[in-house]
Length: 144
Image (cartoon, rainbow, N blue to C red; front, top):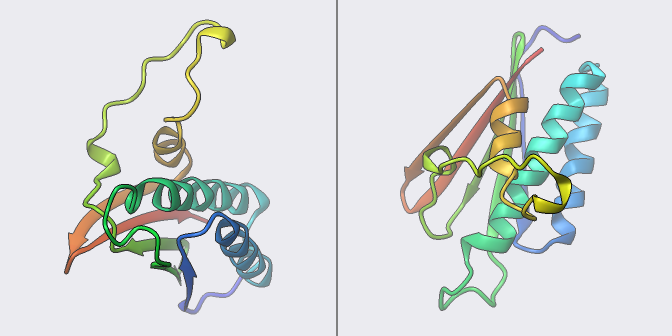
């Protein structure tokens, strides 16, 4: 695995199809850097969940919602840590301040949705949120 720092970014629009494009981009970076399969899986799961939240919720109900909005995804590898940051200009939303949904004992009692934040917290080594210059910044770190 490379020991040097590596960084890159991709700009997406708030469209569902862009989630797959970001996941493919991240997968290619993981392969090129020989990131272990379990870490690559965790990164992909977390980025897909975070981007789905942005695409579905960030601009819902806002006057500017119908027009395409940019979402910046940044990737940085520093030593034995990979950080993936997602930035959007949607309404302020701190996923870390959300209360977890109650766990259901039976599958037929489980609610649909609302598990993405829990998955991000479980699969990423660290998750941080900040609101900077009118943008949501979600950073997920993964130990290699």
